[in-house]
Amino acid sequence: MLPFIRAHDITLVFQSKNRDPVTAINHLNLEIANGEFVSIVGPSGCGKSTFLNMLLGLLRPDSGELQMDGRTITGPGQERAMVFQEFGLLPWRTVTANVELGLELKGIAAGKRTKRAMELIRLVGLEGFERHYPHELSGGMKQRVGLARALATEPEVLLMDEPFAALDAQTRDLMQSELLQIWERTRKTVLFVTHSIEEAAYLSDRVIVMTARPGRTKETLKIQLPRPRDYEMRLTPEFNEIKSRIWEVLKEELMPGSRR
Amino acid sequence: MNAKDYYTEHRRLVLGVFSVIFLVAAWELLLTYVFPVNPFFFTKPSLIAEAFKEQVQGAKLWHDLAISSRAFLWGFSFAVIVGIPVGLVMGWRRRVEYALDPFLTAMYASPLVALAPLLIIVFGVGVLGKAALVFLLSVFPFVFNVFAGVKSTDALLINVIRSFGGTEKDLYFKVILPSTMPYLIAGARLAIGRGLVGIIVGEFYAASEGIGFAISQAGDTYRLPDMFVGIIILSVIAVVLTEAMRRLELTVAPWRAGEEVR
Image 1 (cartoon, rainbow over the protein chains, first blue to last red):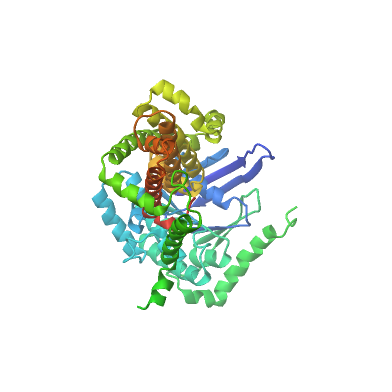
Image 2 (cartoon, rainbow over the protein chains, first blue to last red):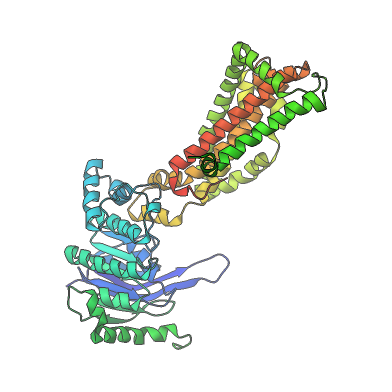
């Protein structure tokens, strides 16, 4: 079977005027199946977020091929949506209007998109906050809006760029559990970039560890935990075992000079 | 609620009102008892109040105000119509920025009132000449503030719009313009002040009617109370307009209530 998302030999070099060009991503290969939840972990600056932006269609690789469902990605498309680390909500719009944004840009009629926005606001548990502005919401609530907005356009792939990194630890745990519940219901393909080994292990079917810059995939680990998952699983020895396996792989990339 | 509670709650208002009353009273008393100067050379609040009452009842004041307002509104409206798009495009398009920058920087920094004689010659002593001066003085705050607003637009929000397939037009109308609003309004506040200067200078220089002309004429004929009436009316107008802008800012940009732009 053809992979749903396929990155073949992707290289991206950032050119800048006053400095040497920086190779952000170097011969990256990766395949993701439809409906799979995949996390990418790697050292800071390894090009994880850059790769997501390529998948989103905001950046083009310098060489290599990036395909979704057999078609090369050439720009943004409604089958892909991103949840951003810093939320990216429009501060002058209410929760509802923010959730509607993607639908509005697609040219969906006002009545229809409000109805759809209401469904998603319910899905992410923000009833009662429809008319609030982002500055009146907590970080966790803001990211719920970000998630609802991404889901509103019914993408096939959800790209999540360290979506919970800006949240406090408890909110983060809560959001992870809720994301899993939503994912169980919608079964979208999710590509989740994170710094947290624990988060990657808890959420994913597979965890991809990237090398330090220039980034490419170093190793892929399958997470053999049953679904649906719950918080208690994180307290089991098996979970710790998985975490330490990821850590063993990642460690080599974090220690300076270990790869040379 | 007793007086003390009222004071704690409205300290700002109470102190402000008291300081105005104190100043006016001190002025009146000083000129009545301490330095009883010839009313030809200086005046005091009671005489100004009398002149005010007289002028409000007459027709000339209202006529002058109407004349000046007309010139102000024309000039200011054109400043809005021209300044906002120029600032938007300049902030968004690097090439436009580089092309216009030297010209605009020079115009913004120079005392443009120096051009008043030229404008009056070209456009005449009527509404048009004054409107041109108002335009020239008030257009730059719009251009520069909108420009700064566009420059400060969050790149993340641009990416958000793009990621949903938004067009260039969507970027302008759904992100750049709304996020520039607070800057635009701060620019409008500056522009109001400069536009009023434009009116007054224009009317000082060459006019036969208008509030600036009235002030200058009163000065020329040593009618100091009448002169102060004009000055006070002008400052009340300026305060009302800039305060309205501040309120407007809070309405269009409630998320910035805490971080006011000056």
